[in-house]
Image 1: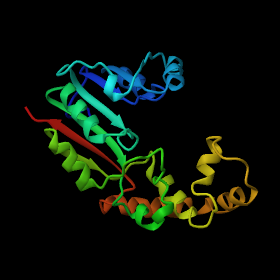
Image 2 (image 1 turned 45 degrees about the vertical axis):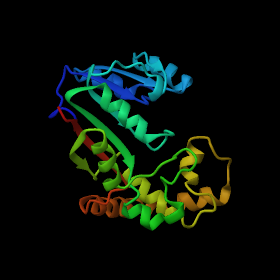
Image 3 (image 1 turned 120 degrees about the horizontal axis):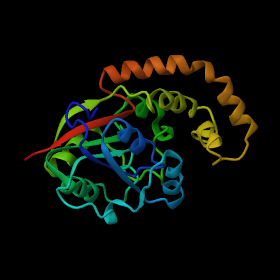
Length: 229
């Protein structure tokens, strides 16, 4: 998504870098990549990928204004307290013509409509803000970032998100299988059995999500925006 607009060896900062896997991949692709992560345990785990991350949030990341060519914020904006302030910071860090790549759940998606209050990405309180594509574009433009490409067909979250959103309509706990696999939910034999029995519906859910993405209603979106000179 970035290479055509900001090719290596550009300087890249990954905001909310998690365990550092993307920073490691970006370095392998030739980028001068670094990142920061507010969770100390996740930041420490980046050593397993040969990466050292700063333990910081957007507000105290210490990135010098106008010093980077690209900022990536992959599923970060929905978590922060003030998305407007976060985007203002990203824009300030970029050199003229630099690019921001941001990924977020899409409140205007088909899976959000089908899932309703049990939509997979309606993950309150972890997800504080939910975006439509129009709303995200408006937020970016407010800070001088012009969207140049919006991706609706994304394999990382979207097929599973559609399947889980549909399954959530019949389980007692929303997104039970996801929470159980992450060890965030206790064993519930009924919800676990229901989820397993509905696993064969995954291919159908993936096809439905593909159709939604092609219709520009994907469950999550990625927007690439350029910093206007």
